Length: 436
Image (cartoon, rainbow, N blue to C red; front, side, top):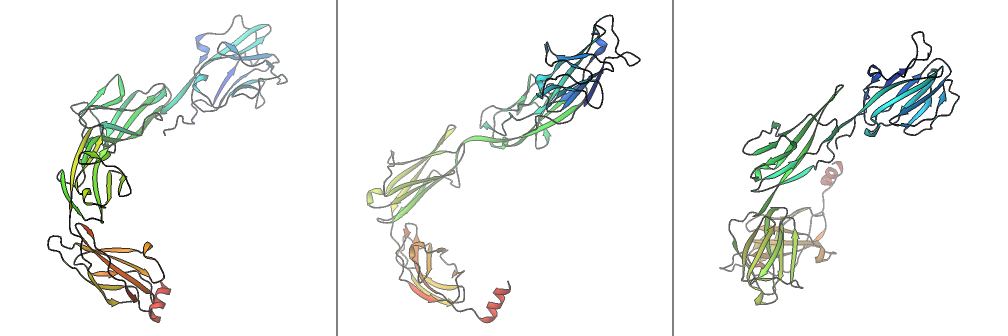
């Protein structure tokens, strides 16, 4: 967040002295309120400042600001009472001078205005005033860091910057280039903090910079903030070239139907079967993730085959995709054997039992140490034709291995367990592992 203030005092000390030319207070013929005695210091918010009113005779000095007298009087010798330790308060004269100091702790915009130091000399009133201007630096804190435009519509980006005095001008940048009024962008001179993006497209997303310039008689301040712009758009299928696809399963098997759609804001997914909402049960589950929905089916009966419709929807549009779930052939168990054993690897030979209409696509290999359960066993999936190598095993350890074949309809039953013990590590290998 851009800092509200900069702790830089334009005026650290203003000396207000009501004296004669020879250094002594004298009774004037009239009250001194001429324009020439109106001083105008400028300072930034949160700055600390004090103003001194002093003379070299014993008299009573009263400090007042605005229409209200805030402090009690105190004599120039410093023996009188003062107004305490509020944020704006009066203190007895410091650094040996006779008088009072008007102290500002952490100046705010409410403190701006006219302040007057008054003294009574020989029964006559003498006063001197100054005008305090408080500068509030550029503040972008109310600007949203993330903003949105709507695809196909005119959208407005808003840069809210506050300061006192107000910014001299506000400019917009994108990719370090100044945004200019034209077909794509529109700038309203009356509201420079608002940038209109015409007919927004996906390419209009990204980072925009809002920059403001503040000018005063004493200082200048240039500040900016970054706005990340996202494009609201209707759902778009991810990685799918058509609105219909084919899936297979078999009774008592499991199948996952997956629907993926990019959208901003994220799409809500709905699943239909024969144009009716899918009802969740022990055999039907839906898992929704970012831009993705998975319908998990345990095919308990043949009636579960058919046409499933995935609907992805947000406020900008709706997509529908039909997945035709047909009954396929459950794959047969493959033939498996371990052909090579090393200290940390097992190499397998896997032979599929092919079904002509549903060829084998790959194999899932599960393995575990002899003492462990299959429930938590790790697995490795291999495409058909890969080198079937299980890595990362412990030396001199007995493992059990089983294999399942996969076709488009799902996985086969596992093979019988194959037990094999990895080779022990040789002394030279132990030395190498210890060294590393």
